[in-house]
Amino acid sequence: MAADNPFLPTFGTSPPVLAGRDDVVARFTRAFERGPVHPDYTMLISGVRGVGKTVLLNEAEDAALRLGWRVVSVSASVPGLCRQITNAALEHLREAEDGRAPRRISSVNVLGVGVAWTEQPVTEAGIAVDLRSALTSLAGHLADGDTGLLLTVDELQAVEREEATELAASVQHIARRELLPLAFVGAALPEIDETLLTDRGMTFFQRCARARLLPLERSDTQSALRKPITRAGGRIGDEALELAVDASGGHPFTIQLLGYHSWEMAAPDRHITVKHAQAGIFEAEQAVLDQIVKPIWSGLSAIDRSFLQAMSVDDADSEINAIADRIKRSPNYAQTYRRRLIDAGAIEPAGRGKVRFTHQSLRPWLRSQQ
Image (tube, rainbow, N blue to C red; front, side, top):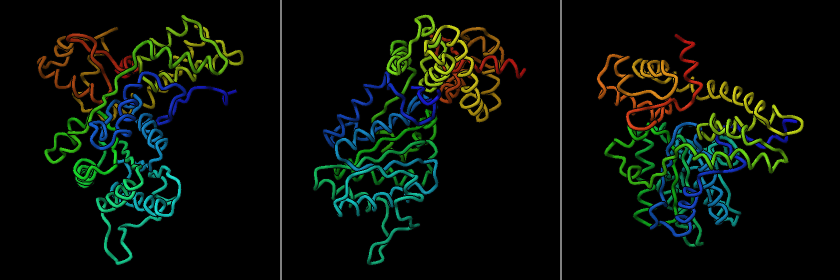
């Protein structure tokens, strides 16, 4: 039955085994314990879609809650980011003053459940409450009780510039200047390096500690596949495991898809063989194509697309110089688009002067379009 499948191929959902990310988890956990003077107290996590950024935000929130902290969890893709945070902070302050237990307030709460939504919060005296004053009041109250507040912001690359300015100024003042217990963890696509972080007014985000998420190492990928299977009472053969590891490319979301579909194919005995793994790989590749590859493609420029089409001619890794010849551009020009496509999550480095597709399903799909 599908209900006992141990894999969770859903964006933003924590996997059954969080493999290969122990170092990042340890960094923010230590920072929460040591306070605002720790360099990782404000952190920016970046990586391509499906690499596990939101999962690490979940881990950070859980770590803060275990310490008895309060958590505000929002997404910059939802309008009114600073109003969301302000309202959540005021709700936390009311709950803290009433002695209610710490909890996580998310964008969903703020926009309709559990928090009184107002366009512009005001005090009883009719004075408008802005983001900095709300967060300062809450952080100051929590400092008196020897606890803290964690603010997480997902999809930070989508933030409006005015919102980003207000957020940066507020968190920097409270956490870094006042040294109040307000920790910050943001998550963004790599494109943030070429957009928000190039703005001279965004020094707070530029100075955040960085955690750049890469594909998992082979041993971590093996653990992420084998452990959930064995814990759920199943088995996977060594050859089947290696096939799945190779097909995943160390991409966490793809790993969950491969595990999920391979498990389904092996019903009812749950002994995953090469045949089951191959069928699971096919299903996973179709899902990656629809959920990751095509959305990436839709956001690319004409030259970006011509670069990828030139790569699809090759059966394996592509040489930058060969790509430049095919698109009739100089190698230096091609390097510019190499960087753009790496940031977009379409390709990855494959050694000196070479690149490969991040998701192997892109090659046959491109060939089918020609």
